[in-house]
Image: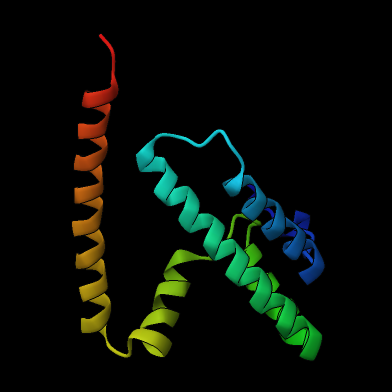
Length: 129
């Protein structure tokens, strides 16, 4: 864990685009993991592709804003965006209220529980003794 912000070198939008391109590419090549992980892998690849397209378009019309987003993405310690700060941002700009955000949290927990149960069932079914 890098805790010294003086050691963090700001990433450029072009560097982040390369990272996103590599991530997307890794998610679409075989061999694929088990069925439960494949869903998350596909989701990560799709999100990386969408973010790369949006960042590329933004960088063409507003390089300073693209750099701002890249710096946010890199995070204060080069470990990614601050989850608490982003959750606050989501509540203000997307969810619109703490109640809607809480609905998302509750739904996420239900999906996580269902995913865990499905993964455990798949592993029981496909594990040889």
